Every structure is written in C-alpha cells, then in structure tokens.
Length: 71
Image (cartoon, rainbow, N blue to C red):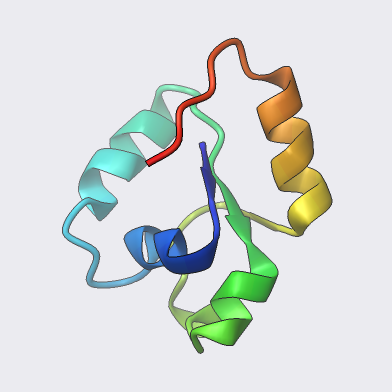
C-alpha cells in the first residue's frame, strides 16, 4: 500500500486506522509512505509505518502490484 499527499495522515500517530494498518503490515503488506508528503505536512517525526520512501518507491510498489485502486 502506498500513502502520499493527504493519505500520509493515515500512517501517523493518532490515526484512527493505524491499528488496522499495523495488522496488515504484520501479515506481509508493505506500507510505503511518501517522504515529501510527510515533510510537507510536518509529520515526519510522527510516522508509524516501517517504510518511508520517495516517489520512485511508490511508483515501483504500484508497478509490482497485482491490483491497484485509488481512493
């Protein structure tokens, strides 16, 4: 799963879905969070996901995905 722009708010401390995302991560789902978006919103120190990357990481994750959906 990739998170960027406003979506980065879902993977930081205080997110109402953080426990669900952690459970997915524990089952092997890779969470990739855009570092530029975190910096833009001042959330770099609050992120609770394991993989923080740039747009190349997000593009690669989407390229490898079997299915891609956007919200």
